[in-house]
Image: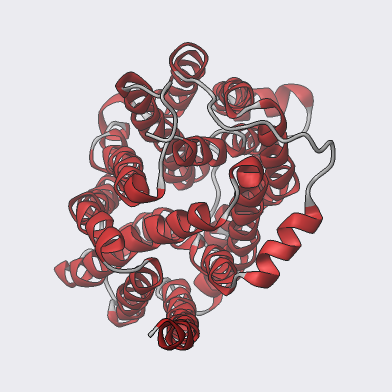
Length: 423
């Protein structure tokens, strides 16, 4: 391991928290269309814009803090920030369940109150998962990084799969309220595990201000790091698109095929559960590929598969047809690689003492991308059709693939003269 203090139980806690934090975030997104439609009464015509706007508002607030929280984690450690984040997320999740009643009580309405609580939840999780990924990186070395980060991503994917395969079946049997309260309980458990089952091992940063000069110099000198930042910007919204717009497509298509919203949500949950299962199955392959070959090559392959899958959604008319499985599987295989390879490469290229700051900016780029592309996707969903957001993301993925090919070729050209000099 990267540090002799890191033991197996610490890694087990990282894996468990990876699953729990993903369950929290995924469940909040997955249940949102159902809650807005059946509890707050949002109409079909406004579905895409409202759901996308909620996601965008939360990402904007995340974006304002996530980079600075990374710097604070370099200064004071990952664990205190993660624990506070879980507590804040638990408070937001508990209050969001009663948005209709509490919004009416304070005179702002249920939708506005739900917006506020989703912001609180997002701020909490924004303090958790970036530090958790950075902490996992702190525990690794170059040799075992791809494998261990793949294991961490496996648990994240497992959490997302559990949400759609199991937890999103609960509204049919236990009601929406039960599912809305689950994230609060999960966040409380996460706070306890963080406090009692993890350790900090990274060296502390002595600088009292954000190390902008070092980060700028690093980005200027490393085109591969610029690639990982571009990957975060253009592709981080991919998983959100699957969770949000597929669920929307099913719920609001339900009336056309004559089934209830809860049944449609369960049907969507099964498909997205399949998506998560494919990610789970293929993550070990990606860990092997990254270790055996090259980080940039893995990004190229992941973006190519994901982009092709998203574009194939454009040929789907009825989401309840079995043909939708093909693009879903392609996107899942590609996303498994896109989830791991950019993070591993970023960790490789970043000095330990500013890892939190660089990772904070890496995640900031992803947040900016989510804000822009989710908003555009919501507009396209309402004006063009349910398939339009997916096709947009497919094109963006292929653009990043081409950029990664250029970076790889430039790296190979740079290595060739050095090799010839050695000869």
